[in-house]
Length: 309
Length: 281
Image 1 (cartoon, rainbow over the protein chains, first blue to last red):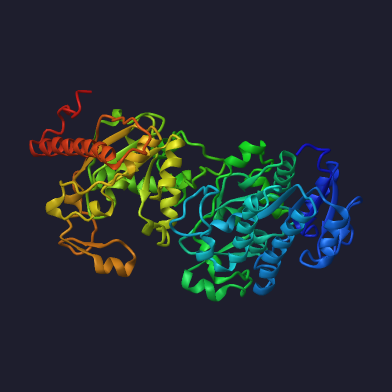
Image 2: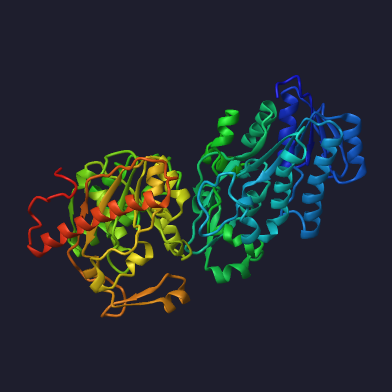
C-alpha cells in the first residue's frame, strides 16, 4: 500500500511490547495511529490516539465507526504466559472475530493478523523449515495453543470470507529483544533455563525491531495471504542459553515436569516440553520475496540485545 | 572432549567442508563443526583400525553440487551409514558431508536426537531431502529402509524391496544418483534373529540379536564401492510403472556392484582395478 493512501492504522494490543515499538515506528513513518488496548500506556508518544477499550466490547466498535481506520494490525493475542485458559480463548477467538467483523463493516482495506510460528507444533517427525501449507500440528502436540491456531485459521479464512478486505496472516518466529517480553523472553527470564537432557533443539527467533519492519513492509506492500516471517538462522537452545548469559539446567524428561515453576525455573505447561526437545523452524522465503524484507539483526545481536537490555 | 584436542588432520577435513557455517560453526540445519570434529575422531578410528575400510570409486562422487548416494543396507544397525559418512569426510580430495535420512526413532531418543542433528543426519522426510538437494548437498539414502538393516546373516548380500520415494525426489530435483555397494556389515554384525516385540517396547523398529547376543560389531574388513553416477530425466510425477522401472535400474546396478565386490573378496583381489558395471570409467 503506497504511503499516502493508508494514513490511518489501528493497532490492537498497542500497549504490549511489540505494539509500542510498532506504534512509534508507524508515527515516525508518517502514519496516523489509533491504539486500542485495555491495558494502560501511561506515556504514549505524541500523535497516538489511545483508546482504553476492550476489542470485544461495544466501545471498540465505536472506534471503528467514528475514526474509520484504513488498516488494522491485530496483535492483541495472548499466550499461556500471560493469561488463563478461559480468558485466553475469549481474547484470542472473540477478539479476532471482532476485528474482522468491524473491519468488514466499517470499510477497512487491510487487516494484518500477527500470528506465531508455534502454529506448526514441535514433534520428532516434523520437518525443519515448515512451508505455510503445513498443517497446524500444535493442536495435537500442545493443545493449549489450540486457541491461537484457531485464531490464525479464522484470520486465514477471512481471505475468502471477506474478499473486499486485504488480509495478511503473518506467522512470526519467536521475538527477542531489549523489551524482554514475549514467550521466549519469559522462558529465558530467570537465571536458570531448563533443558531436557539429551535434547538441544534449534530455536528460531528475530529481533523486536525486525518484527516491526516486517509489519510495516506488509502494510506498505498491501500484501495478501499467509506468510511465515523469520530472522537469522536458528541456533541450538544451548547456544541461546549461553549467549544470553543464562545457566542451562539439564534435567531428565521424567523429572523436568515436576520441577517447572520451582527452583528458579520458569513455569511452562507440561506439553510445552516438546518445544524443548524438537525444533519449530519455518521457511520465510515467500515473505522475503514478496516484500524484499531483510532482517537487520543477526542471531548474536538479537541475543545480546536481550541479554544487556 | 573439546574439539581442539582432535588430531589436526581430522580437524582440517571438517574445516575444508564447503558449507555455509556461521561464526558459531553452525549451518542452517543445525550441523555443528565442533560436533563433526568430535565425532569424526572415534568414527575415524573405527573406520581405519576396527573395520579396515577400503573405498573404491571415490572419484564417482561429484565434488560439489547435489548428489544422492543410494546404497544397500549391510549390518543389523545403521553402522553402514556411519562408515559412509566417515568415508565422505576422509576419502575425497574435497571432503563432503553425507546427510543421512534417519529413522524417526533416533530423534526421539535422548542424546541420539542431538547427535544426529549436529552431525547432519535429519529425520527421513521428503521435505528434508528436497531442501537439502536444492541446497546442493550430498544426500545418503538406503531405499531398503529398516527392512534392509533387518537382513539376517545368511541374507547379507541380498537386496530387499526398494522404496520409490528416492527416485521421485531425484527426478524432481534433477539430482544424479551415485549407486553404491557396502560389503562387510553382515560379517561385523551377523544378525541371527530380530525381535520385533522388544522393538515395540523400546520404540525401535526391531532389536537385532547376534551369536554374542547384543548387536555390537566385531572387527571385519568392509568395502565401499561408489559406482558411476546415473541420471534420470523427468519431473518425479510420473506413473509408478515408470518410476519403478528406474528404481529397478538403480537396484540392478547396486546388485552388480555387490557382485563385483563379492567376487573381488573371494579371489582376494582388492588391490586390482575395479571393472565398473555400466561401462569402464
